[in-house]
Image: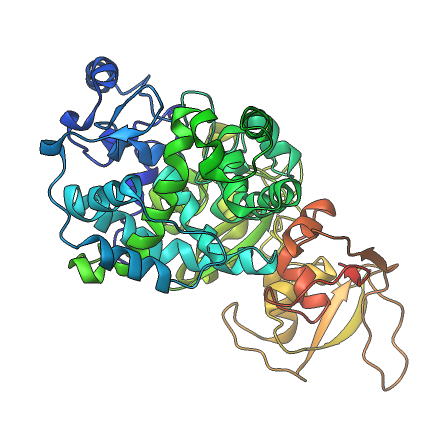
Length: 508
């Protein structure tokens, strides 16, 4: 596997409380305003001292625009020498923006043009880096936005907010790609504590952002105003509307918005333009290497990344890149089940060496860790013995394999070890199983005795969740502390299936 380009976003900065986006992308210091130049000088000193107190704007993509000067009305004024001449006439920009399929207004004016020139001509290399990351992240955003019936143009919002940096922290404490403040993140279901900050999880935070955007649209009835409120808060937009004598148009309330928010919608328009028309400006997305596929485990014990890295030789940097929500390299599964993402090429090694992983220097990495947990993940369960479980006190169950099942999911369903399941059936841990295949399972009180000729399933009381407006598979899984993969599997659904209010979802 190639080295993740994403690592430069995560591994060096994962533990820093504030990330300097300018330093991250090597933006030139001359792009700062007079006020920002003082802060930049301070940041250079901080960087040389360990980059301990680097600062960034709430809208982290603003580092590209810092050279802009503001007049008393808040309209951005570029000096003639600060931007190259636009390489396209206005008529081309207008035609291209009009041709973009968007339900969100994408207006054109001098402010928008200046941002387009800044992206496409002033800092093309930085834009190519952003475009490379976008090729990986934007399909994830689009899928989640589509589930929540949000215009797909909103996929450009994290570019404006964070330059697609999952661990960025603003001066005010807004965190992650979608730049959630702590209270807002919790309001929309994100876990934030000493070990975990799901604002830094690209998937969880996108679900939360989708809910927030829907709430803002419900309040204002206009996506442009929803964008402005996302940046400066609902109250600030309502005050601007009041000062504009009740007018509810972004450009009508523009003079009454904070300076940063005045930039926000033009930046959003320019980012969408860059995503759509970068080829016409001869920009090529920088190559970014990510895992071809990722496997997810539900971890029910406290687990340190180095325990995994030292046992199956997966670089800690890769674990950080795929799991940026864990601030201290620790999955605190002893509190509640948490997801762990690893490249699929390490899945078999993780399953086969699971007991060894949890036992590896447990007291060193986590003094309170359970060294040999009886149950560790939703995919497989580590045990404290190399021998199969004692079957004398267990009932034999015949499980018929269903489509989509794996040895890990079957082991998790019956709360047995994958190694034991393989031993009972003469299989290897990486063996392929097929729908209709019958497997012997010895589980203590896991199921009633099977009737002759019938395949027995675990005997559990069924629990259902009635879908409400705004629910998602992720939010339901979080509510009941179950894995999303298990939730989809037991309901014979995929992550693209629609959730209709009133529908009953079976909980694993």
